[in-house]
Amino acid sequence: MTIKVTQENEKTFTIEWDANDPGESIFNSFTEQDFIDVLQYYCEQELSKLEYTEGTSKKLRETYYNTQSENQEDEYSYYHKENNEAQ
Image 1 (cartoon, rainbow, N blue to C red):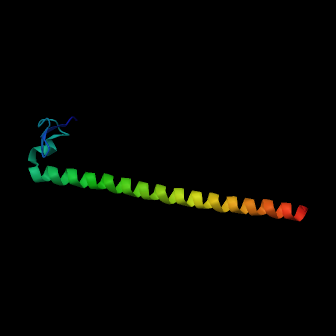
Image 2: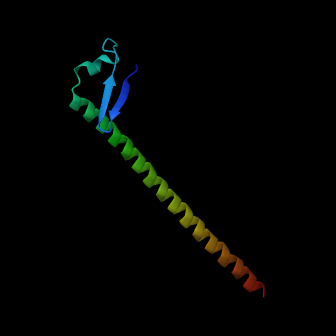
């Protein structure tokens, strides 16, 4: 299955496929709007995944750094507590 997409200019693309190929023949009945709809759908899906992944990654980093910061404060306080008791 090989679909060739060529950008003609900023707003125009040419899409070519093998009309006799069983996997590609589905495109034989596609209208221009069908192609636009399919491409838009999959672009939106990929953007949603990217936004979700970036959002999740950011939350995980924030949680990690907050946890690290809390642990450092606890270790710092513990160290000073131990040193104050030793005096």
